[in-house]
Image 1 (tube, rainbow, N blue to C red):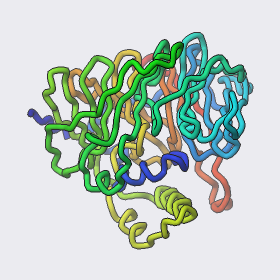
Image 2: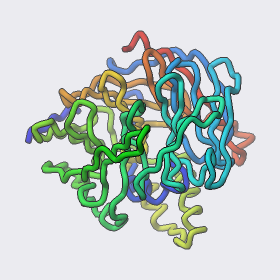
Image 3: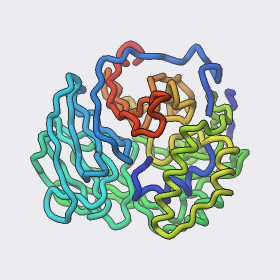
Length: 374
């Protein structure tokens, strides 16, 4: 093994996110500043509050769809500010959702919605017309970071949910399974247990993994470590050059407290000591579970926990070379993102003005032109 040293998820995912993301990252003075790109923002649209930050950029690069978790709906808007469609409601019937977790772009301008409450995936026109629904394996909790679908859909299912094993850093092997479903036939065409990782990281915890578009695997580990496993099985451990061990800021602590309050409604007592440990422990490098994507060129994008106050940062890697490419800086507090062609879309929360510190933060989708960077 070689080592290179260059130095709110929605409620249904909250337990997994807290289990995998128990730790917490740096500002403009971290890492290689020459590789930080601040693209031009070319559009912004305010969207309803939601506990879910997932967003799908559709194939025309102007329409984005987000989850409104409080109304159990999907909302699609275009860069001019027009509402293209709002669809869905709570229920079990066609076009209804029990618990939305992901949206993603598909062929011909379609949008897909993963409903883990009803264990199914629906394909829609962004106006809201339901085109097809596909049943999924039980305990499907998320989609692969290959964030587009065509004939098939790839995702991850929890085989055995063991928070203790997750917290102990046992790695994903044995309790997470990759699946792939043919959308037309609903046939399960691939099912593969996420393999154990034959690699060591200094901090000792490998959290979760997913397959790369060109073969091999990528594993997210603690304290800014990534493990790239090639097609032949050779692992390469990389320490993110932008990771500095930044402590949670006030907004991070407030967000964690809200998550713990939600768990308290489910019978898990609010532990002030655990909150205090979080406040005094460096943040994870990655933005919880699932905020990583592969773009159409096979590069890996990771939403990081750097700052997330005035600015947020996405780090980009070449998995084949196990190499850091650079960072993209966007405004405000990132909650989710998607990228396609020359366009990046980001769901953000705007900072509250001091006179409205107890209010609800404005939530928006921002479009950025990344053509020059790419």
